[in-house]
Length: 631
Ligand code: ANZ
Ligand code: ZN
Image (cartoon, rainbow, N blue to C red; front, side, top):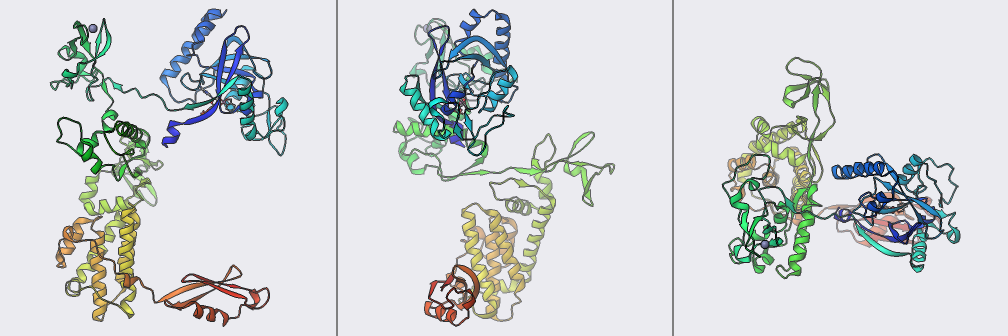
């Protein structure tokens, strides 16, 4: 996402001479392969050429009106999907290769801040240029043909795929992918262009007309201009006796703050009342947390290098480009200046999803979920049983009223159920769809655990973990330790939902064992203790309560359950049999089977109908997995 946001773009600058002067209009293009298809050139109204064009224009008023309209549009919206509009500048440019005259247009979709603000237009191969050409009756010249069949003219839309060059003189027959470099090299060799790199990234204006934020320590003097505050007067502190009118920053109404003297000439001057964007601070202030007591420096390198970088950043996806890009930028500067010894502030990023829910509405607007009820798959209002429309599942928002109050949920089901549902319903990086059924399911699951633990309280109290298990309890013993391993691994990867579903499986397995022997009781006791411990991070209240009932130590003081590798050793393994690479059979072997025993077992079977020669030439055994029979 950051790479996209920065938007590095490699292309070529190409010079077009004006037909009526010696001046040059330079375009930036990433598609020099289409150069021979240029039928006009478009430019931003904010370009510096504009003033001259206005002077020369016979229809100056009309041109000015167009320019004003587009400028307003560019200030008001950043979304570039508005209707394409243009205006002829009255000027022509000379095509650098053909020498033909091409008209120069103002176009509202050309941005002043990107490239050169001038674009060579290729209507046949660029959709924006195509729409523009259709609207203003400009020619469409095909210079790239698909390799399999010729395009039908007139085109219904721009052809933007690669192909082979046509109508391009010496470049005819060249693949468009190769022609990019060829034409670019040619133009450069002719002295009519240069390689260019452009970035989509816009400048970051860090000042805000707000009170909260770091003061900008600058002073505006009518004589000296904008000058920095004297070092001995730093830091500039914001007044604390402020009143918020809700209209302007209170600083603008506080002469006691802004009236000052100029550090250069000593005359009357005003202090800057804008403050810095809060991102300026959040880009580095976490480093102060590593060293909150230093008073001569913001932080000491020793303390910061010890604690930073951040191991795990968790945030909404909106931080991936803004905050995280700024903080990387600040960190690199601080590293360059020698204030920190690392160049990346964060080791790992998790962008969590959103909580979503369907919305309910009727003619009088949106309804809260507790104003409706569900019957036979349809929804009705509680107030008068009238039907309710159900909207799509989307981000919870107050305006759509598709929100649930966690307190209501906690009152009805308890905090453990609420937390368990949130963690279970989706992996953290995905959106979570809220559902009452899901919440009820989690509540039932906790009840099942309560029931099985309290029913086996004596067993849990009296039986220690088993040493080694054979026979009837073996399956649950293995399952317990598989679950311990899985839950541990999944928690480390933030996959709480799969950790919880593994615990659910273990609960089901525990319900199946009806213990008779002491060893079986020990197995069940260990399984139930493990369930309590493993579930504790997700449902702390009920599990601490159960631990106490069963005479276990306080869980907060208990380490994560230990994995017993012995329990994971399988008695039997399943080996897949391939004959000449195709799956043909499966066989069970004792876990300690040797390659020779597997080969003997395979040779004892009759696979002759799958063998080309009718007999086995070779047997290749990949231990524990598969055996390939060749012949
Ligand atoms: C001719 C051409 C033909 C183009 C074609 C595209 C397709 P990126 O990849 O984002 O860098 N462009 C250049 N400057 C512009 C500006 N200031 N405002 C609007 N558009 C501008 O995009 C580069 C392409 O965007 C350039 O390549 C140019 O159009 C356009 F079949 O040149 B192209
Ligand atoms: Zn001054």
